[in-house]
Length: 509
Image 1: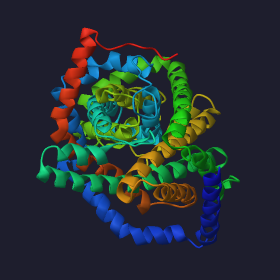
Image 2: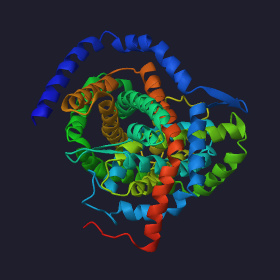
Image 3: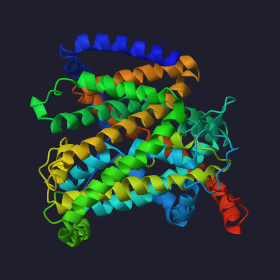
């Protein structure tokens, strides 16, 4: 409790200074100051080339090509291991004596809470509006391929994690880039260190921005929207909303990955049920439109009549949404999955297959169907109005459904923040050392930025943080290519044991 009191006292001090300067338009000053740098970074990360008149970011191609290669290299592991992955998630083959801090299910829930978020609600609405219903087809395909990327990076995350004397573990791309590539020789060791530092820096930037400030900002915006918009009592109380959320986040992250896992293992199933049930209710109320919706998804994927950019534009919107939603290949999830209790790294790779499946193939598809069957998709939509567009679709069935969406948005944002606090912390301690001072300093900064995100117009800050998250994919996937034989060796050995019945099956009570 003493750590919590110290943290809260420090946070209150930061908030006091922030509340004084916020009124003088500091958000605009920060945006103006950071804009040239943010634009340069975002421009580099999201640099694009033109195909069929459509600009395609290179990072998107980098993610999709890797996912496709991994799918074929591991002979469609996303299909072959799907059943066994479920057995592991439900507790079969669990070894409580193995190193690690959380179960397979808790690791999956923590990683899912970092990806299932506003992108599934706001981003899908934008993708369908700009790319038409056909974008949904390509979104599902990209999610399917992304399962193989998650398998690869999460297997490596456990394989090369650091197991500390106190029972805690640290893992993720930072460690398999350094330790894994070092096994290949001195030249690769140097490359690994450079890639690991690059990844860690990008991860910290992404944690403060896209994994924190953006989530707080958009959930507050939805709360204001359903309580009266500009006339809402909450309209100018972003700092208060941020303080409440920061307090809740603080109480969770102070307990480390075990505390985070306990919360996410409860929140993720609950919020998934709430959102999916609401979405299915909308679809059932418009059941007569469902056959036509699926017809438009298939037809639109290949014909794309009337859609800007034709088939390429539709494909791009679908792939973009899937890649940016499930973060397969970005490397973030490997940090959470590395904390699992297991002696066989590949088991967590199997569990990780479910992440893109749930995030993209289930949740994103339901959002897309809601948008399509209600006829609320609009090619002229403002890309910043995704949440409002989805809210309108839900409201078309019941006037009070936006409140259900508000609950879902808030829970999604909260769970994303606590997961990204862990990702950012592990990257931070990789850079500055694993000790109590670096641990506490990161957590205090993270909580401060929750309030900043709720209170300010973020603009260029968010553009920069988005670029940081997807910049993680460059060093991460480059390292994964070099380490594919390591993953294949782990897979072949384990699969032989599994098929021959040599694995001991135990069910957690």
